[in-house]
Amino acid sequence: MQSTTIRAAITEEEEEEEEELEELVELKEELEELEEELKELEEEEFDEESEEVEEELEEFFKFEEFEELEELKEVEIEEEKLKKSK
Image (cartoon, rainbow, N blue to C red; front, side, top):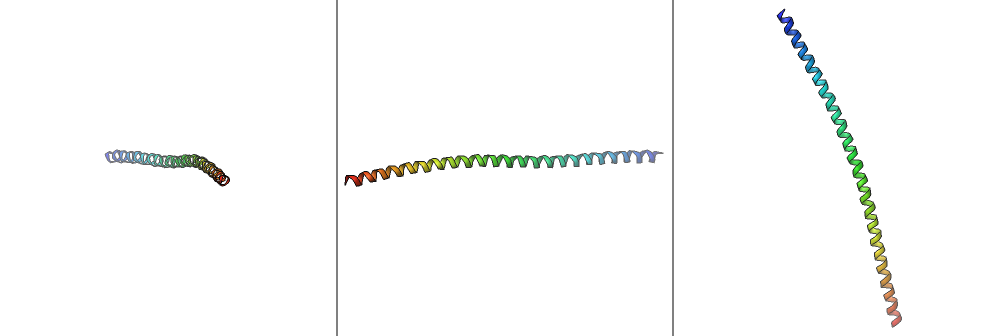
């Protein structure tokens, strides 16, 4: 009788441990999924930020190029003035 009670207690404890292990496995899988989602979101955010930075750089270089063209025009005008004055 006592051994039956002990076996039942052991079996019950083993079942509880097995359930806990299953829960832990499920939680681990959920965590891995969430980590993957986070990674994807970070990559998307990085891509968006990279695009914004790229656009800002393009605008900057367009402006720089425009300024250089303006300076070049001024130099050409000065050269023309010098040629005319000679």
